Image (cartoon, rainbow, N blue to C red; front, top):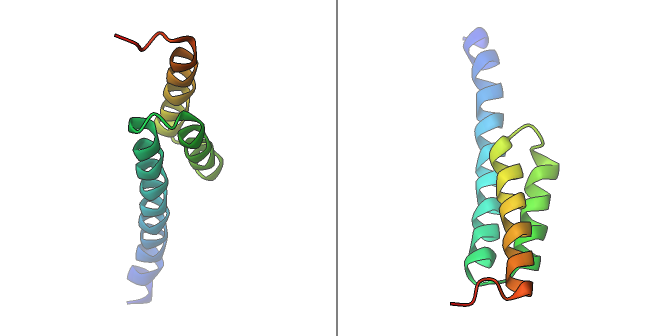
Length: 78
């Protein structure tokens, strides 16, 4: 029984960690889709700091930085 718990505990910790990361990313995208790019960059930067080995959070941060620059330049106007 203790062997099983020894193997399950890291998985539970990982799932809690990924759940927290998903919450940060969700808040980031909420800001992103509301054109609040500074706040989105802050949330995605926090996700990168907490999970530097996840390529997806780096991609989200880069996307928010790019769209913030395009928004400021007026390139998103239709």
